[in-house]
Image (cartoon, rainbow, N blue to C red; front, top):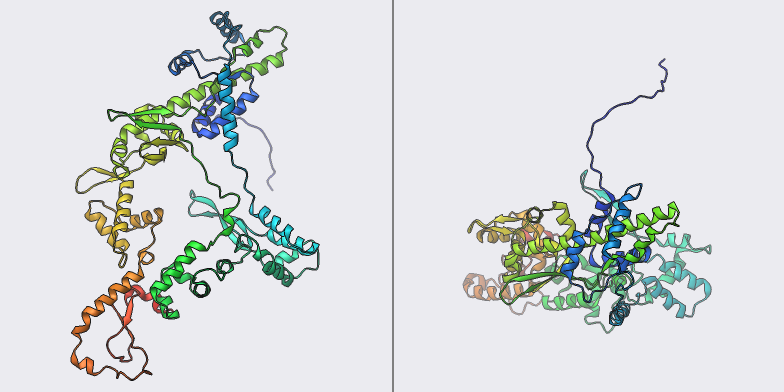
Length: 584
């Protein structure tokens, strides 16, 4: 039997690892911050660090400020503090006689700063009430007994942000070892679970259902408290709703057909004509809300502030300038620096002040470095994307971050941080800086590199110009793009179509146009009917004869009554209609 041996030993292991200095980490964090977050960060540092102060904008040239700060000797920290005292002596000689009459903010500058803060406060919208608060306020106005009111509030606590009765559950999915992400799924909550969690027992599921149907589902917004989409849409239909009866039938029996644009299936089941069905579907799409709860709380619009502005000059060139109106100008407070010269400070206080001074110096330089980096990166991007600004988005050029990094002289990760969540205002509109990056392929006709965005624009153009009665399939889109010189595969077209929210060819089909075309085709083919077929037609007075079978006209899902007598065989079915053929 072997015994367990405990001991200690030493090993020498050689390895490599990168350690980032605190100043470098802070510089990267400041570079990656968007404009609004940078403003909040500076405001917080101004309150916490006594060595920082606001600098007056008026009367100070940006060029001299940048030159002065870039040429300033960085602060050095050592345990003895000798280097800091030498720096303080140098500052004292340079700023001798200036501390007493240091310029303060003028009255106009103070008023301007105050007006800016008041304007910001006035433009901040009030917090919109959440869906739960909106429902609770309505329940408080109902004449209910205490138990029913609390049960209604308990039911409302199970309504998720979309307005449905259920909860959101986060699940983690993994497609590969590196591709792992979280997503939310909706989990319906049974009425028995709601009854079991109510604080007053006994409570049955039937009692919960009565309160749900008679109180909760009658609250605003219409459709709240539904257990599925069909119930949500049905709750929103009133007698004033156009096509109310048709909508109820469509929602109860044909929601899936509407989602897949299978209008001929609906026509065969309801015997309504295609234009009437389309009118009812338009009412469903524009007057009924499948997620009524999203209009509350988190559905507020997000406003974007541009970090950079690109303007066109009279000679056709472009100038790039940073938006600095919302970034508080900061500098090191020379008055506070004098505190370190006092001899009555104890060592802990002196150490704390040194750290604060060092942090203030790092922040000032990090903000200036962020300013210079974003400016250089944006200027380099504009140089490469000049055709985009001159001719339009369809002329965007392939551009990689490595190209900008090589031109500016920084690492590619620095470029990535510089453009992350940054926006630029151009004569063509407001765009994220990441919009100007992307790969491309060589055009087989011209030999020039074409950006993927150009291929997407061409795809949008083909879909916009297609015949809606017979829209282009993915294979046909691939053929037309290849004919135009863009070498793409079908999976690429499908991917771009989904990214651009372009429905499939079946969903893009306009069945009313297809029906009109089919009728016109049938009329042109009617004179070619043989006399023998005409003799075999049913007598005019035979009203009890069933309708003749449909004849396929070569378009998926479109059929018309046959001018020929029924022979008892099924009508020819187009291969694209195999999904509809099995439906009633």
